Image (cartoon, rainbow over all chains, first blue to last red; front, side):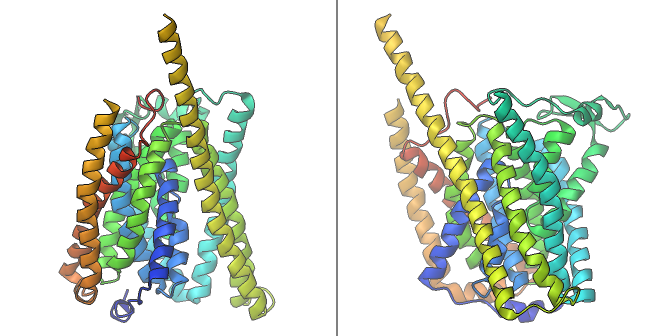
Length: 363
Length: 81
């Protein structure tokens, strides 16, 4: 933060090509976020940095586009009755604390081990979380698909049943998403972890959404919609923190927002057409694909820190480019699944309507 | 009924679309002034936040109406609780 003034003077020039690139990334990111509540942002920070934007400014501008996007998405999904505002705010407050703590850890690592150490920490966190949580989410989605129970609302897990059964006096709150009273004490570590992850890899939802589904017992649709409220609360606080040091490039944030508001509306509409397990499927597929992207970067940073043998610049560059390409592919794949599922849902609805009209005519 | 909704959305899309284009044009015309003012930090931190809210309202209404005008709306039977 101390070199904020130096960073603030590094506003990049914007050509039409760069604007279109940011707009397109914003659209695809927004589409995925509107659908799974989060997950579109991870590609934007490296995407901006590839245009020459300094790292901290890219993080700050990404954050500044995220909260208005989450607001629009949350309002849209609230219209469909999918948002639990109370749960979102409660989790959002502890997530905010997690963001501050996570950012502090980041700064500490950067000071102690430099950029390579910080990058290694971020990538290792990516790999660990995505492997454990992403693998679990994807396995659950595939299980639902194979069991043919894709039309049913998800079954509540054992741990969620236990959480909902614990009664801690003076801390019990009713949440619409869970249709149950739980102790707010359970929400604190979950929100905090969401915030720490958001500060580390820019996508808190990879912990927030699964924890709402599997630990608290919220259906996938409600969890992904409520994540947008958490993202809004975290985003406003985070943006303010960075803006205090003049690090937000509002032009970048607003160009990405221009695309992402088209995407988020479409993603939110998409949730009304798909079967419940699709939210998990898209989330799991993205998480596991991104896992490979970050896995490729681990040896690059380890070599920079001399933890393994020296790596030639050509190999390092090839791994970095492949990693970035896989990240974009992950987002594109997520967007493709959303659009395909939505298209099929719309076609089914049209068929149902015409069959209904035919039956009415006969009667 | 559906046609009326579409027409309404089209009017909304045009109004908010024009406003949105105006705001974005202003952003690029006054690019240097905006960069230097917003980059000051301190109390000026409210400016990017207020701007993001303003754009999300105007551009959000535009994009919402845009999809509705194209007939892309939420499913009538599923998902809406």
